[in-house]
Image (tube, rainbow over all chains, first blue to last red; front, side, top):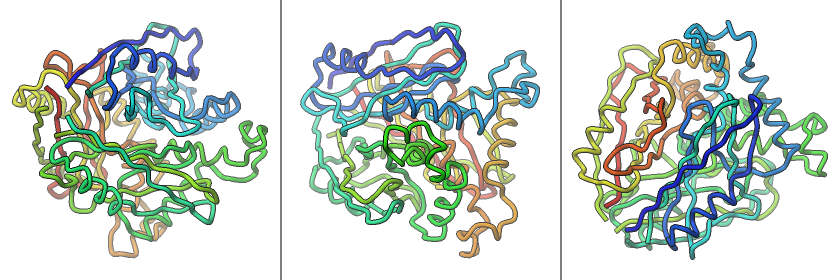
Length: 139
Length: 139
Length: 139
């Protein structure tokens, strides 16, 4: 069994954004030399997500509006977590809805994807450096 | 390390449905000959889900009603994604809530499941052929 | 390829609670002797979750309040699933939002975690014995 590990670093200027990281994961896979196996891609921070969906700006706008309706950022005093001095309780909730991680099959040295699948990094509490882990196991 | 891959094909006549695909995944596992490992089962389309829960029709009805309340299909003009000519923005949201994939342990050649776990395909934008990927790695 | 399997048992006295199970998973990993690979940690019951987030009581309170708003327990007659004699339809929904499972990278014999990642068991229908599965594969 072979394994491979890499961290991808991000610093999103604003509070929230969606970024297509599929090319970065493909570069990791090529570097790994693994032809058959699984790749795990996960946010290493608990106010960010990694998920698979369309890389379409209108849809990302819809996610943003819908998530903000579901778990609004303000008033920050609404959340008990924010009594710790944080203002990001909403980001912890949004990340749960969108997910921490994806596991993708590797077949013939490629991400084994359907026609529109793209790996998206979802930032819900930006403005500082954060990481995504890419771990590949296989043969 | 052994690996195995199969696509399951579906064409759901209506817009939304839940289908128990556990027997299909069990057939894949038997065919793979893998006794210890992990199986990844994921929707290859971004308006469908694979998740694990009860195969109980009342519960599936409750999911349907609850998801439609959370991210209504209409008015389709409510979603910016639908300006692309699609009418399925709600399906992209519903799929995020229910999840893209499951990873299941394989022990002694069987799906290592609790008493009521079943693998369900959730369709949120049916009426055309769509696929689920089954990828197994192990020994 | 090596593999390892263990069940963790819980009996939560009340209906709902969040429990940090990271030390239990770390003990499994040490016992497994696996240095590079993946660990799957999943609820074996369909009204409970395993997820990764902060072990902070204020945040857990916020999750509790938010989930109860999203899918209220009462009135139990609101859910068709409860016509089966159950009263836990809301728990099946809450578990979908929070997720069934996590997959964590293993690197150098350790859980490959960011600074605040903790593995949390989320119980939404307690009062009886329930299980979490830990399955590790690697080398």
